[in-house]
Image 1: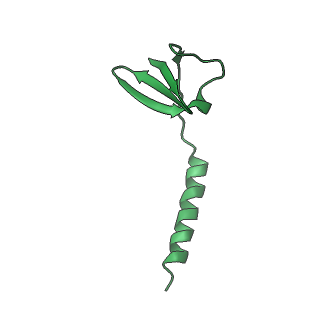
Image 2: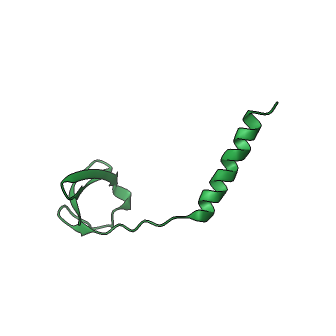
Length: 66
């Protein structure tokens, strides 16, 4: 269970079990308050990952040209 512990500036402090972590406040739904339980869903964006890998490869090739 993920619980909003508090807000600190631009960050939301999230409680997860006995640990806490910060996420940007802009990712929290509007109107959420301290003590609210939230759900987070994470998905992979394979298309963007592939595009990014191609860009990094191209830049590395340009950087290390003979």
